[in-house]
Image 1 (cartoon, rainbow, N blue to C red):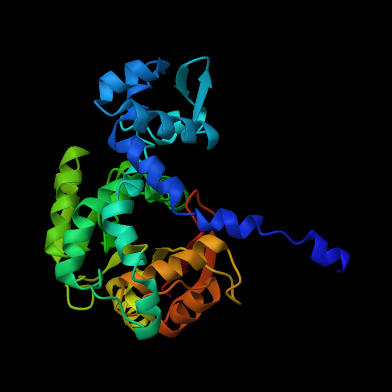
Image 2 (image 1 turned 90 degrees about the horizontal axis):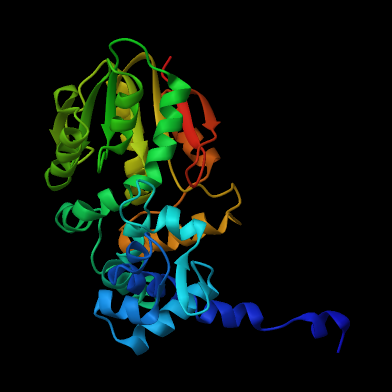
Length: 334
């Protein structure tokens, strides 16, 4: 055997064979409030068992696995948070992103378990980009991913630094996170939220919670039939093109172009892949997530989306670095 053959090991395949384990372990810990209970200081297994009402056997193996993943530390018999878990896995923290993990076992994983079938047929059994199923799925999910989009929305707000009475069109708004961040930065802007009725209610509640209800208006319906209005200074499309598919995305960009005033900006957040679809791995995995969840969804490259923007009439397609999973894509209506 060659030296190269000797150096090949199955380790990576073995690790992938257990790839479902980490998010399920995290979900179990979140559902038993492990991270919240450790926020005020280290605790031993007996204390955590009494507080969670979980079995000692079950909790001990979860805690030890979390130590192995470095989401917890242990000194003696006492478990404690790490900086990572203290920042992102404690519910009371504004940076909490555990909400997405909480959807793993009941909403995300069941769709992935049908992957073999969907690869054969090209279609999922039920699509979350259809209104009935989508409203049910996204009603809670949009708030759970609010912390994922908020830093990128704040970066966009700082970059644009909108001054005076400006009009923002927040498309597929979900929780309203993009409009809220922009309105926080620029106190005179007005925001129009567009989404399905069952999701618009979430954005309305968040606008009230942030004290911005008077600055928000709402248009309910499917993106290709809802009223966008005209004369907007900015339109945001936060993580929506991937679920729409190419044809609907291109139509949506044309409709958005018509809704903006001359000199207006479109800002797109997406899980981008590179032009030859060899990475990054998160974007490639998310494409599979779209396969098992939508009729036509996929992930796209900057080059693809840029070409659609040009087709719609936009100019100067450009990337804006952001704290999100990919840079934002901006373009201008001449």
